[in-house]
Length: 79
Image (cartoon, rainbow, N blue to C red):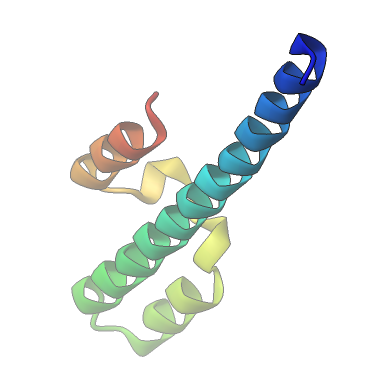
């Protein structure tokens, strides 16, 4: 097999692997947000606040995160 074809094949394999890793990363982000919501729900006794936290799963602002969860997000995201 010519070198160019080998490189194209390897690039295609790396692309598939990257897609797999992105899928894992997105799954971990969703899991982390679910944990965040559960934490907020247990912290707040007001049922209205619990409802708002669960309905805004993807709209949680950085300022509403605890320092521990922000550090965990930074560790997970590599930033």
